[in-house]
Length: 74
Image 1 (tube, rainbow, N blue to C red):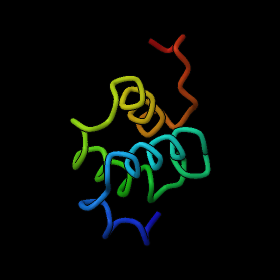
Image 2: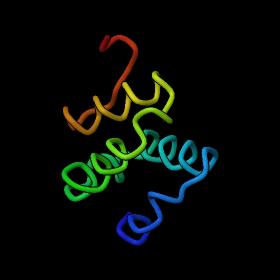
Image 3: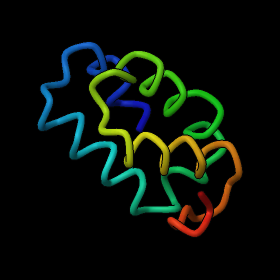
Image 4: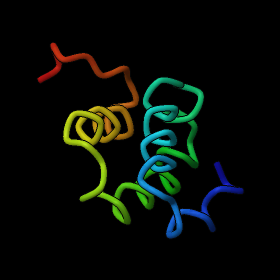
């Protein structure tokens, strides 16, 4: 994820969606210490309004709780 951080401001809608989706689907991303503590919070803060509500809820839950999000968690 670190090499992508400088590109965060320039992500297109499709690129942002692909990155968020890949992050949600891969616990080696959202559960990684630096991703949870630095990279993903920065990405979320920068693009919160551009992330779909369901994906935003999932990625925030996974980053905060360090466990898989399911709709049962609502």
